[in-house]
Image (tube, rainbow, N blue to C red; front, side):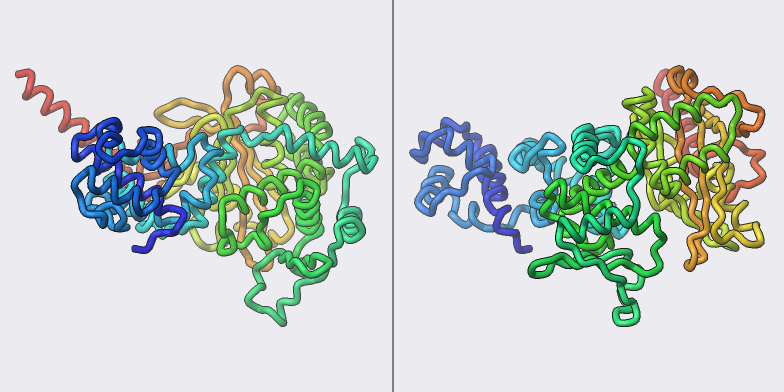
Amino acid sequence: MALKPENIRLLFGLKLKQLRIDKKLSLSDLSSKSGLSVSYINEIEKGKKYPKPDKIKALAKAMEVDINALTSPKLSKRMEPITELLDSAILTELPLELFGIDPATLLQLLSDAPTKTSAFIGTLIEIARNYNMSVEQFYFSALRTYQEMYDNYFEDLEQEAERFLAERSVPDDLLLDELYLKSLLESEYGYRIRVLDDKDHPELDDVRSLTIPKKGHTLLLLNKRLSRVQRTFILGREVGYQFLNLKKRLFTTALVEAESFEQLLNNYFASYFASAILIKRSLLVKRLEDFFALDTWQPGKLLEIIEYFNTTPESFCYRASNVFPKFFGINQLFFLRFNSYPGHNRFDMTKELHLGRKHYPHTKKDEHYCRRWVGLTILQELAEQPDSRGKVLCRAQVSEYVGTRERYLVISFAKNMAPDIKNVSVTMGIFLDPVSIGKIKFLSSPDLVVGEVSGTCERCDIFSCKVRMAAPVVLQRRHKTELLKNALKRLVTE
């Protein structure tokens, strides 16, 4: 396996440290034998420096090994997974410093327990292969983790959005629209905005937008099937790229186009900025406060807020998740998106975000999600309507999870995504603790459905459930294991 040049010094450092440890030499011992300083050897082992040929020869002689033992890119079988990791795009393209580590630190962790670490890394690689996980999907998972680490709220981006609005003297109560943003991009940032002709390029039929840097201008192509709301958001995102001076960028949001984590992160920052200038936090917070102060559950009022901001339920839920922790003290919540086709009893979770901790529900591969979730029942309701095109349903449920007795206020929206004839639901769940219960006045409303739910059918102990899609095999296996453990414990004590 050929290693990328930027990782060769990391591999050299790892091999040097392992050989030194195998030879039972301390840094001081190797320094005395090779004539190289302790600090220099330490820098090599950390992957920060790559020695010159004469230094490599001195190190090999000091440890009584062939030079090839140090310079060969081949690792022993027990450390092959580490080679795969170094050869992947993770170390070079993922900005590990965002997560508080750097490649050298990771190298030290790997070299401290190479056999166990190799087994762990090998397991991760095997899992990724089994689930056909691409590098781009890894990036998206890393981005979601990054969002969750910061409660999906970035004060610096909020301030940049407000600075943008202030510099352009946008009144506090004025909402930006498509025409304003289009004019701004064309006049100030040198954009030329055109319709994407899928007749000439049918392979781009599913691409929402395509940004092409040209000499002297930037060409922005927009899919002709986009709604006004979608076009406005894309224009706002382009403004974000320019105003925030984000250089490394995505030119389309298609999954196959992501070449590095930084591109994906910058796309998120530009999108966050777009949400912040289109749905101003001051206006959003006031309307959410008024909505939570209602004595009864009134979904129409929530839909009115979404319509006021000229946005989609998904964008609204994401924007609400930005302000909940800081302005409402609500920092335990989740966001989910499901796709479903009418006539098919299958629901695919296509997006999730968890703030505060990992909540139920979350992705479970090859298992059947609980059919009691409002995010699924609303899709079934939409599918049963004779003409669902253009309709947006809004339903809510106080969900109580069996086994944990944890309760969530779960609000779901569902809409038909023509022309795909695909129904999509987006769901926001708020953990009901003393803070959220004190903020949301309509929780005792008789119009609010209360339901007992589970995670997946395979893990559910509601044995009388009439909408179960599979036997509780995971639960049964867990129960059988507990019986076996208890039996073994009794045998040992007797």
